[in-house]
Image (cartoon, rainbow, N blue to C red):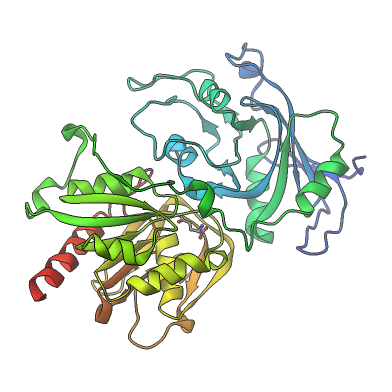
Length: 427
Ligand SMILES: NC(=O)CC[C@H](N)C(=O)O
């Protein structure tokens, strides 16, 4: 049963419950229904080119968000995060780092450019569902081959719209990440869904094993040369790189390949001894989903490889490197997910606008001497990059490969090439 509550209407017409005060580990209300008024009466009367039915998002703080579904039916539990990118929803849907999470897009209208085959970041969508304010009634882009609604339905992925994403985002910013259940099943009670959200946790779970490849493969790059950029900064040499797949985004492989790397992608459990037998010029530890302290086997592999070849960690890879060097990771309040995060490169003083997607971070105070914090997130001062020159280690907490997002940090791939080059010359 939904509890009754008083409401206030915001200037934009959203109806918000007042007096709702969620607290982690002790929520004041059991269930409160929160509604969003229709965007405009003109779009409300237009026939939607997708089939839609009622859905609910129930959060662990007891708030219930009635919505409409435009994707697959069902019931899923996950952690809810918000992403501030204006577009790039297809890259977000196919980024394996979102496994175990619902992604709420803060941009109020999504779907305008449809989807296409070139913008995939992996073979599958691993996230648990997409939450948006409004689905574009029309799709208009020369690269579009399908609508977002058809894409989600074909991939059996849940998507909901017509809920107050602004109010939910404010709640996540104030209270921190919340678990939730998304359901189209009318037979399930609000209470059942609430209990489901409260008895689930993403912390301490190894999500990497579900998204990593099962056996090694050679990356064959299919990027159309017309789409490539920064081609004048390459040295024309070829470097052999082993990429540990903790949930790797294809654009990391595309960018490495663009800088002249021949890449063998290996599963997360690939033994360090086997990797070394392949005599790599460098090793990449990729991005990946979930809690970095829940995968000690991966930290062990990283430790075994340290000092044996130049290494480069991106996001999850950076967090695993942080642990392998003796540091600790912690869960942030609501993480960083978006394409406009300012990062300062401490060595050059330059600021890059970066693409980010993480809920955990390395605690710089836990790192031993000799490990340098090379980059800082200027929004909150958190550690955004590390270097340990004695062992040819470099790592970034964010995404130099963009996809989606700005390309300011692409130079980091060239720095990895330089690291491999120097190490080759000195050996
Ligand atoms: N993109 C990533 O690699 C994310 C890393 C990790 N899962 C986090 O949330 O912090």
